[in-house]
Image (cartoon, rainbow, N blue to C red):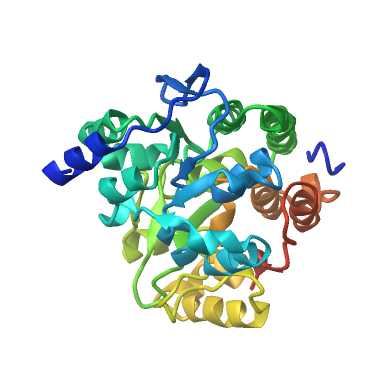
Length: 373
C-alpha cells in the first residue's frame, strides 16, 4: 500500500458569567456526528480537546497543538502513558496544558474548562453523553461551543465524518488534510471487506473470536465488547464475536460462557496503563518478551488449556490505543489476516502502521502493537 493512500454548580455559573471568549471576526456552522449544528469560530485558536489526541494531530498538522489550551490529561497520560511520553518529548508544551479532568472518572471540572478560555471544545460522543445536557449547557452558556466526534463507534461512516468535522472546525490546511485522510481510510476498510467476502464465498467459515481487555490480568476477567470498538473491528474482519448479543457495548463475559463458546482466536487488548502490574503491557517502547510473559499467564486460567485458540496457538495481543483511531485499519488488517491468512498474504499490517506514523505523525511507531504468543 502506498503511504498516502494506505489501503455543575452555582460556582460554575458564576465562573461562566465572568468569562465569555472573544468572538472571532467571523463564524461558521458545522454539523457534528450527532447531527447537531454548532456555530464555531472560523479560525479557532484556543481548543479544548477531550479525546482523539493523535487523530487531532494527524488532521491538524505539525502545529496543531499550538491551538490546544486544555485536554483531559488522564485519557492520554494515564491510559496511554508511553504514547504520551513520546508526544510530550516532541511537543513539551503538552505538559503545560490545562487539565480539565476526565468525564468518565467523574473528575471533569466545568470551572477549570471555562477558566482555560477555549473558543471551542472538541469531545468524544461518550464524553458528551457523560457530561449530559446540563454539563454541555454550562459550557455553552460560557460561550464555549461543543463539537462532538466519534471514532468509538468503529464505523467507516463515523470515522470519515469525524475526520471531516475536525478538519472543518480547524479550517485551512487542516480541512484539506481531513479530506486526504478520510477517503483512503474508507478504501482500506473496503479492501478488507472485499477480501473477507471472497474468502467466505470460497467456503471459509467465520472463526469464533473472543476479545478481552487485558488491564486486570489473568486473575479477573476484563471487559469484552458486544458492539463498537473491538467488536466493530472483529465484525468487519469477518470474525464471529462470541460477545455479540451477550452484552451491550462492553462488560465482562462469564468464564463459563467463554469456555463453553470455545473461541478459535483470542485477542487480548493491551496498553501501558499506570499502576496495573498484571496488565498485558503494549505500546511504544514496550518489550515484546514482557508482553508475551503477561499473555502466557492467561493460558493458565482454569479451562483455557482446552480452548481451540490456546491449543492451536491463536492467542494474540493488540494495542488498545489502536482502536478508535484513523490508523485502526491496520489492526483490522491484522485481525483479518489471522482469521483468513491466505486472503491477506500480501498485506503487512505492522508495516502499514509504521508508514501511517511516518506520513502523518511526528513520532515513530516503535514498540509492541500487534503480537502473537
